[in-house]
Image (cartoon, rainbow, N blue to C red; front, side, top):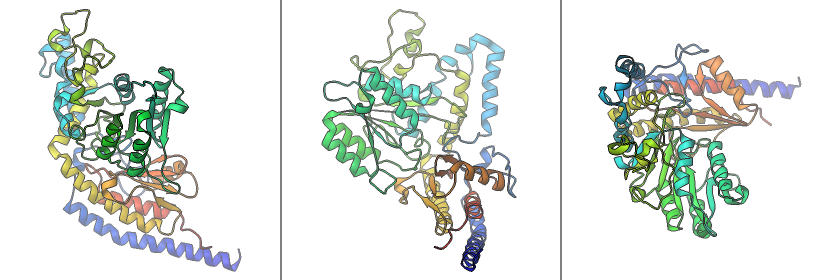
Length: 449
């Protein structure tokens, strides 16, 4: 090793030690913040740590799978008891009759997404719901055939819209428009989306964007983009998988045509949990709107007449097709009751504080390392996720080291993104401190040139 290389290594190690000392001083501040702003961690099961010096995981993967509420097991067992004790009579005679079970989810869901109760229903899974909604709302005609998505859309959305284009006999490479950020930027600008719609709107049949981008954590300006799309004559739908339970929503007032979301991320309803959808009331009961139908979409008042022709209600329930999996509804109900009790305004306020604290700590770590936060710095343009691009090595390998060496669970998106989601229901300021300390200990300070 040359003298210059030795000096460089010495400076690198000194920088790493200085970062760790500064972060060590921040631990007391994290503990003070937790005492003043404790959240609701006690209501959840937190996995034990598989590495590091703390018994519980610092869990930052709620944007992929939320933690299990402690009440879920009890509520689910109660539904199992109904099945074991009265069998088929549970459809009508149980404490929560199965024929109407989904209605227990409608009110809390409507409040969570800013909708009327007639506009929402919990059913199926996210991409299934997107397809059922596109049957109704993607109706290409003449020159108006394009579907606009973001280039960094979740792959399932991309597959869904491309398959819809093919289903209508169109070339998906020509039909699907993928909006990209400007050169050198990581996130879409609202003005670029609205400018495209103003210039090309007469060719756009459907706008389908993610409310919060899964990769970057960017919160899109849903009302502005919805207004621009509808002014251009397009239908505007939203994938809210990363927005529901994360940021406040007002789908009815924003005039959104339709939306769909899952409930296993921020809504903590379990892996593969039932999803939800929204249809604006102006579309409800429209006899000219095509829709796939099945028995469960028939009005309950006439469903058991077993008539050959469906009589769907003038609500979002009309988009139901099959009987919903009843045992899967219990965890969703449990979670929604928790959101009703805590309230989205309080959660959003804590989210801004918690994510801001993590950002402050990450600024210390990323300043002299090959790490860059790509999520917008403006709290109004993000939810509770900070995505970090790594400049050296594999994101998956770094996530593994964070987990097994430090007890920090974040999730990776190859090739170079690590996502940290400090969820306001159960994450702590100390968790954020642990994440920053783990990054500082795991990623080397950049050597001077």
